[in-house]
Amino acid sequence: MSFNFDLVVNSFPLLLLGAGVTIKITAMSVAVGVIIGLFVGIARICRVKPLEWLAAVYVDFFRGTPLLVQIFLVYFALPVITGQRIDPYIAAIGACGINSGAYVAEIFRAGIQSIDEGQMEAGRSLGMTWGQTMRYIIVPQAFKRVIPPLGNEFIALLKDSSLVSVIGFEELTRRGQLIIAKTYGSLEIWISVAIVYLVMTLTISRFVAYLEKRFATDDRH
Image: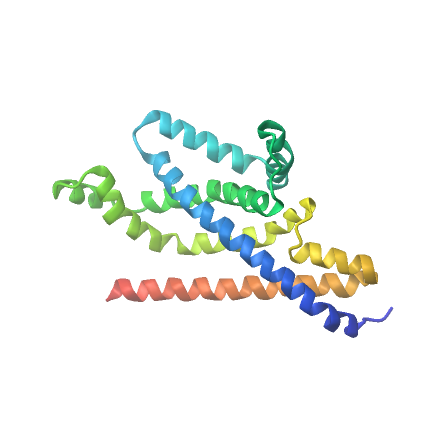
């Protein structure tokens, strides 16, 4: 058995295109997840029982069911209800974003609850409402603390985004499958795909570590 380096070299441009699509899907999905997660995380700790209950149901459902099933629900089941076909791109970002939102909600909830209760009391004593205190005092402090787990969520979703290949979306994993179908070079291509994923995750990890150190430095000043 020989390793075909020429196949790796020739296939790398296509794999990089797939990697670009993977990063784009992941970034947009995490952006959606952060927006959803912030509001759901706050709803989880507010004292309005219906909101607490709805937020808990959302988090439990999307954390307790596989992302693959959620992708199928969005792409195949939702059109049956609406009568409208969903574009694979929208379905991929929608499913991944909603799934990410459930995990990000718990990240924000933990981050907010880690802030000393005296911060809320101080804000209220200054005449701020609960919402204003959360917006201007609590959430900015909590956001700095949740950067590492948000980075981990980005990395996890980067790898899980390979699941959107089941609806024909040509991200990195799907590109690898298509190349293998033409060349039969399973060993070379899967090793190449793994290396590309590794480079992306290590790069993100280093960037998150930099941000964490940068915010820690700003706090000391």
